[in-house]
Length: 500
Ligand code: C2O
Ligand code: CU
Ligand code: CU
Image (tube, rainbow, N blue to C red; front, side, top):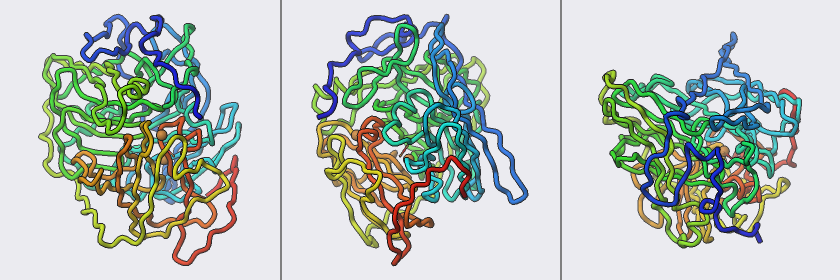
């Protein structure tokens, strides 16, 4: 059985100094608790420097190393980061470009860098088969072949992913394309804001508390945005776009604003939606992204909050409390100036998404999620769970047959949701996705197709993105093969070296 579940600490935690400026509450409408004295402007992850060589290859450098970060005012928390003490720079490239990332591991433990949401060859994927030893170097190179989107990168070492992300290793990878989404705010860090939302817990000395895992892993009582607690965002324009990542290990968020104002969802994991979707709440499970555009009112601050999770399906109330499903949090204060720069009107069309055509389907597979298993199996690095053929349309049926919340993520691909318990997905979930929430009892069908890249020996992963579940084995491996190609003996590239 899993680690014994405990009554959530949220209700019994002694007030540590670290929790003063920002803490969660189990009541649904607590007074805002930000404190001007300790509030800090939201840090914006810098855009990563890159060089472009004669062949047009754009090269980035990332170095994972330990550091110290004042995540909460007045503390110095030991953390891990890429090119800094926490998180990482935002990588940015255009669709069609070839990118290379020169990665160095300056940690004292092995790690990997996985490009979550990226369509790329298996050897570049950065999953558990591409482990980079301490002091090691890895240099994946691939061509970006997908539309504009907000992707992310994070470690994926076998059994250790939750810890590596919790300690601070995560960053965004933004893809641009040639379809100008005119009208969408697009000035990075000004009206186009990256927002990595994570939950953390601190010890009395301000260190990250890694004790007391629940059945969904480490749940924090302090929300950090872009690495710090208690942040505010100065806003200078009428409209702001937030590219939001749920970078937490096991916490779900149901995001909205303190005054319940409507906003527009413009993008999901893998790109823009076909039209902006007006909404007042948007739910995000670990690993999912959403892009929203929200109107500001001059001089009127507004709080981005998380509300109790609405989509619970078969989640029992007692379980819900244990998993933080009922928690509410203040996440970020948006502080518009008195005079706001005019923003363009929101476009009515954003992207042309093909209709999901289920008539052509070559194959169906199903994935039952339960405890730390998928289809009653736990991850085995030496077992390929199935092989699929490149360029074949498939339907994957994902069922949560458990009483725990789970989600489902697939590497190398952006899929579309066909239906959820037989009904078409809501508009905000109708675009490209790589991670989908699966509450207890629900059955979700995905239209999925693996294009371009085949590898007879190196697999891609599919897994629950509640990082502790993944670490405990709620993951499997599949190969993408050319028609007629046979599976080859698995090669462990344990790189530490350059490989192309
Ligand atoms: Cu976010 Cu297997 O990854
Ligand atoms: Cu991934
Ligand atoms: Cu799970």
